[in-house]
Every structure is written in C-alpha cells, then in structure tokens.
Image (cartoon, rainbow, N blue to C red; front, side, top):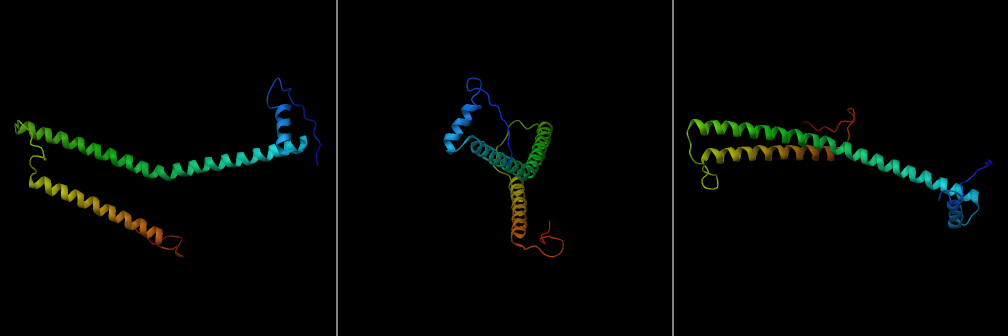
Length: 153
C-alpha cells in the first residue's frame, strides 16, 4: 500500500475538493482512502465505456460511409444524366417547333412505355444480383482458400 499526502481545496472554492470526498465517503460508507479508490475505479470504468462508445460510433460511420458514398455518386450520376436528357429534349422541341407538351398521364407513346419497362427490368435484375450476392456472402462458410466465401461479383 502506498502512502500519499493529498491536499484538497476548501468546499467554498470548489465542489470537487473535500466536499466531494465527504459525499463519496457517505455514499460508499467508507474512509477517505477507500472512497478515493472507488472514485478512481468509477472513473476508469466510465473512460472505458466512453472509449467503447467512440469505437462503436466510428465503426458505424465506417460501415455506412461506403454505402452512402456509393449512393451519393449514383445520385450525382443520375442527376447529371437527367440534366443531359432535359437539354437534349429542349433542343428537339426547339428544332421541331413543338408548341405544346403532351404529358404521359394524357398519352404514353409505345417507345416511352418500352423504355420504362427496359429500365425497370435492369433495376430489378441489379437488385436480384445484389440480393443473391449478399445471400451468398451471408450463407457460404469460409473455405480454406484464403478466407474467401466463394461469392463472385
């Protein structure tokens, strides 16, 4: 057991001096040295808990960052393509002197319906491949070939 001489501030100057120690002595029903040990133990536990929370936050951030970056890139790509299409359509409308628009709610042409179907099919195929890839990664046990799951793509 080590002996230390500790000087604490008067209760008038700070609530973390002798007043705090006396409160902890009552709380733990012990002498000053045991109360200080309890306070140190609590402090160490709270610091470890705080570090665990910070690690959890960082791990969560890293896990979602990849997906969010992909989504951000894709949405930027989609926005860019939409703007290009608007510019091209504006040019077609100008050169063909089209005076009025006909909305798809009023009449949908066959090429537009076919284009919508093709896009929906592509999206559905992508979603199925992605779900299959995730399913294969989740259910395939690790093999002896370097820890890979055997999933492709």
